[in-house]
Amino acid sequence: MRSIALLFSTLLMSSSALAYLTISESTELPAANNYQVGFEPQFLTNEGGGTNVSGFFDAPLSDSASTRLWLGAGIIDFTVGASLKYVPFPDVENQPGIGFRVGGFFARKSSENYLTLQLAPLFSKKVNTENGLFTPYAAVSVNVTNTKERNYTGTQAVLGTEYKHPDIPKMFFGLEAGFNLKDSYSYISGTVTFPFDSSKGLF
Image (cartoon, rainbow, N blue to C red; front, side):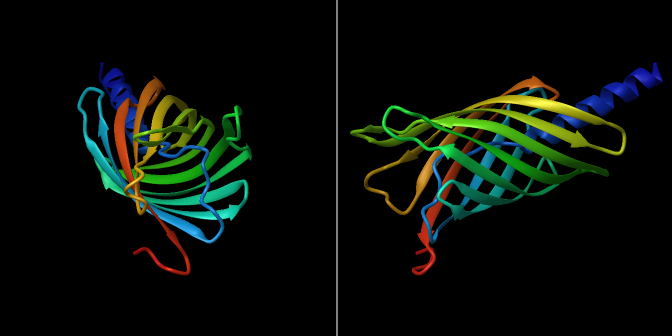
């Protein structure tokens, strides 16, 4: 009985650790010499719930790639990571943007450390409306996690959108929902992002 309880506890802790792994971006890339900073509150919807808050910084690498640095805290005590987004097929005419993101993350919850490699195919398409520019996106996040006790793979289905209001050029917004497929958590998160030109600064 004790071993069953220990196994259940380990599985629960492992699932919780995946809660901080969001996507929070479409296939759109920062233009050359343009950077982005933003923050993301995340609300877990599984049993027990909880909140995480992350900050991020985006930098362009080429016409088809960008990188993101992450730092977060909350129900997961501490999170740090970096990701690379590569978009070989940009969003043009009737073709959606098609790419993928790979990232590495370190997290700590209580006395447990988690090292995670994330791979996520990513799809998005811009939709221009009278109320602003929406960029809906979808991804399937595959997260390979290593802990002291075991290695395992968790998956999430992710749906979200970015939104740019025509009267607010200095920021844009995002809304995302993640759905647990295996060894993961369901969540809702939002983002506020501030793009800026490196020669002019943030404001």
